[in-house]
Length: 198
Image (cartoon, rainbow, N blue to C red; front, side, top):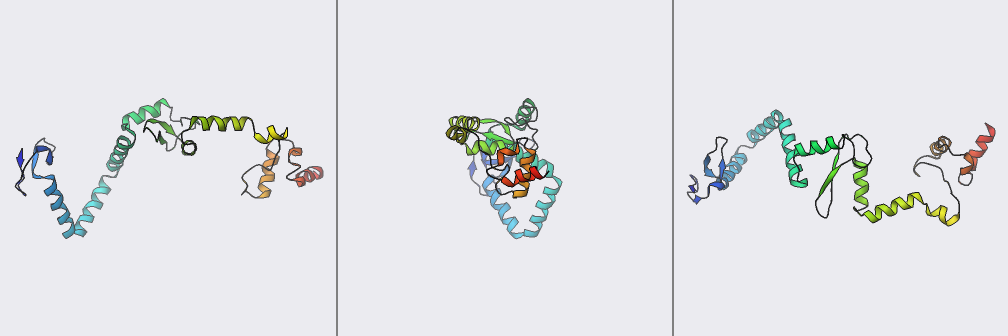
């Protein structure tokens, strides 16, 4: 127990700031907060200059502290444990196995369990599947057995690429696809005409 030199209250030691040398300060945390808030209000310019200077001198330290705090608070792991997991994953995404430039920490939204590191696309996809294994298996089955082919008895083709891509670019993608141009006769008969002219 200790008496605060400002408010004169008898308080537990934990309510005082601990110095690097191991002893507690003479002003309780609450009084110190009030003092600092009042000082910053009176010395706005000086306060901002001090903060700017400290941030400039300690930018790497702050980044490490932020990363460390975020990992502990949000994912329950330390920076060292993150490095160990990334080393285990060989610096690649847990699903696509592509090299990670900036990995996303993947975790279960229901339980909070941290699972590993993924690229943005894989993490985004898992999020849209709501971590539902049955849904992911259904998507896999859908890709392996397209419904159009099952219903109509044969495959159908439109021009490859996104719908928003220009028709000219999509025609070029069709030529590069490796499929016979005959596949595109329904959606783009002009491709076959181009082939005949060539």
